[in-house]
Length: 86
Image 1: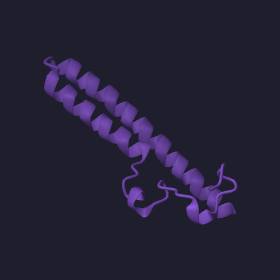
Image 2: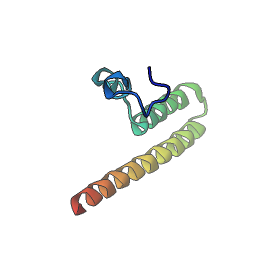
Image 3: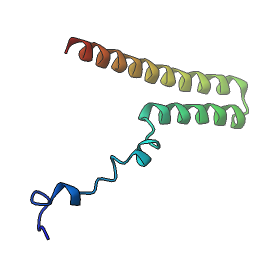
């Protein structure tokens, strides 16, 4: 039996992260952020009594959601550009 991972035979190496079963459950950080923003918007709508405060809170949350989307979109376009140049 091998004492370290370098001398282990490839057939003995188990990599559960690369299993197709586990890849279906990978969710991007962007999707998680958007879900959290939606939950925050819903909580602001349901819990804040003053209409003016409610709209301000929802506008601020919406601004952060928009900035997150723009950043995500910019990274996607940059990765497409870099892969096209190769």
